[in-house]
Amino acid sequence: MPPSDLTDRPAAARLVNVTRRYGRGDGTVHALRGVSLTLPVGSFTAVMGPSGSGKSTFLRCASGLDRPSSGTVHLGDTELTALRERRLTLLRRERIGFVFQSFNLVPSLTARENILLPLRLAGRRPDRAWLRDIVERTGLTDRLRHRPAELSGGQRQRVALARALVTRPDVVFADEPTGALDLAARQAVLGLLREVVDAMGQTVVMVTHDPVAAAHADRVLFLADGSVVDVMDAASAERIADRVHRLEPR
Image (tube, rainbow, N blue to C red; front, side, top):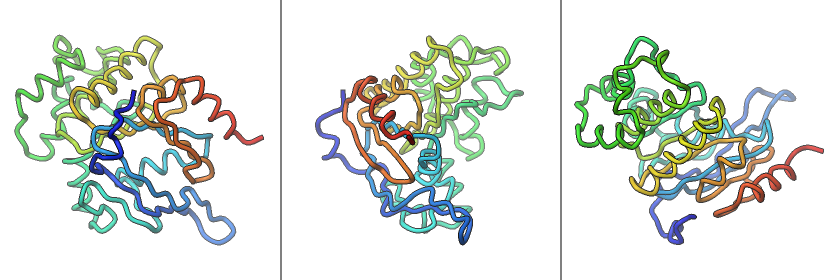
């Protein structure tokens, strides 16, 4: 599945020797231990590992939601770890998209208003052609006037994905995006993630516990005890499940 030239592409994001520690003294927790990797432009990367392996901390540091204890994080040519909080907040709004398991939609807004919310907060006008393309790809054309309570779980996640894409971000970070969905909705959302990479050139990073979901990615990173311990390209769900099983504590 993965393009053979991924290693030749420029970096959408880079982590260089990133560590993240919580607490002090004997109570220190080492959530990330010297993680260095590159996320190529137009790639789909899945991140897997046992509970407590550092998956969520990796996503938070890579996306600028959390600052590492040491090391650097780069989005394109911009070093996130060098930015002040206000500039970092603006950068996340304009250049990073987020999709979460809990959707994080505003209940009082329609689907269309939720999709356009990042642009509204940034004071930017929508690119109508881009918006139309996103809405059509996510299958939301006839749901734009519905509020979240009037949508199924799969439709709400598609709204969240459309919202993440509307600013044309450098990277979309997805944290367990299919965890709250039924089988049909999971497959639809995973298909959309694959499509935005293949057809739109988007860069996607997805944290997941589901080997079937991870099998949609170009590359799977395996974390254990805060370190990247293995990488698989174009792996089947069976191979991925076996590798995760071997990382589980005995």
